[in-house]
Image (spheres, helix red, strand yellow):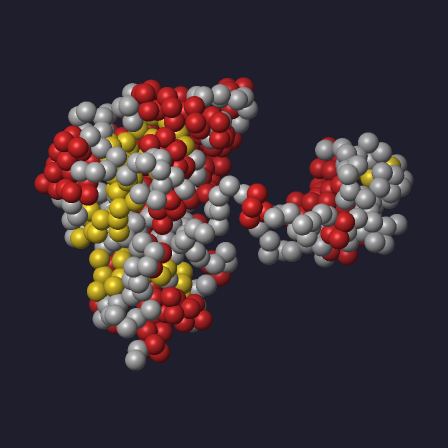
Amino acid sequence: MLDHLIITVDPKAETSLQAQIRESVVEAILARAILPGDKLPSSRMLATQLGVSRNTVVLAYQALIDTGFVQPRERSGYIVSIDAPVSRLVSPAGTSSDVPGDMAGIDWDRKLVQSCTDIRPVRKPLNWREYPFPFVYGQVDNELFSMTDWRDCARQALGMRNFGRMVGDFGLDDDPMLVNYICSRSLPRRGIAARPEQILVTLGAQNALYLIAQLLVSADRHVVIEDPAYPDLRDILKQRTDNISCLPVDKGGLVLDADVLGKSDAVFITPSHQCPTTHTMPADRRRALLDLARQHDFIIIEDDYEFEMNFLEPATPALKSQDHDGRVIYVGSLSKSVFPGLRLGYLVAPEQLIEQARALRHLILRHPPGHAQRTLAYFMALGHYDAQIRRLRRHLGGRRQVLQAALDQHQLFSHTASHFGGTSFWMKGPDWLDSRALADRAAEMGVLIEPGEVFFQPGAAQHNYFRLAYSSIGESQIAEGIGRLAAAVETLRP
């Protein structure tokens, strides 16, 4: 009997008890902690040891038999299969000290041609779900997503009708079913008409922005972004050029400076729902921006995130809908309205640009996973996507009302929020407030907020802004969370 075989289970873990037993045995076999022919504990003994039912262990052993790791022995219980796929690269005596470390005398600062670690992303704790009041942006509330519907669509994508294509290499192509639904469902909601040849599926909107930057931005090109703006976009562009102009934002979105825009090659904007202020660019300013683009021959990149979150009134049509000569490149995201881990977005642009972006994507990652594409296509085709949007709008509308009431009750600074909906409030505190210190103090009280400094260009010293999101916090938690945030503010008041 293997006294040194340690198997543990956690009843509170996300994976089933059967799966945990299987994982423990497989890990031991692959690490050669147990070897082919070694006897395993009987199902009765292991069940008693773990405090689980014997049937749970029997089913786990049966699954291990089916996968070739374990084999039954008549009147002898179970042994590690003679043909088990034991790793030949790991020695039982191997330790972490045997792994080559970082002290080999290599000067990586000299070897690396560029540094990618000096970025300024929006950070949140990995365990943010453990905080009782998480006002964090871009995360999903599990209770608002139907995992049953998604699982059914994933099963359909794995069916024989789709399996051959799904497991293959798409090459340069995307899933035609998904592209069709983007053309026929998503884009018409934004007033956009496009052909499949003008669409490229990407690994989220950020991947789309990266592809555009690689194709349109270089050291001798001048680009314009908003200030404040999406931090990752700024970091993406800084890898390509230092020639970046940051134009301020007011209640109408990007402030149009004709002198600056007239010298630009590309302008990156979020006109329908400015990130992070939530302001919407009015129609007259949109027309003026398009006129400037034609006059000075620059390209506009429109990031149209959160357009589905219009629970108060219909969202303003996309800027791309007014583009009649192909100057606007449209970036859409499907992750915001489904779940962020999906990482699927798309580009809409003239065919010549899409052809180049498709080839570049092929060099980087070939194409987004086929199973994810086809599962999402079924999710849209069977009406689950529309049901998800309706569910989100209903719950987000209620949360916004509660949040607004709590902010008014505590008179917690000035704030802005999208007039059509959205998922966050952009907060401006008094000059004495440092939102970084507030975030630290609030976290000690169980409240998570997002300091706003990272959204501004470096050196701007805009420390009194922060973002409050309500997509991942339950409606019943909001009022108490704002109360605690107000208390945290008082501890910092001079």
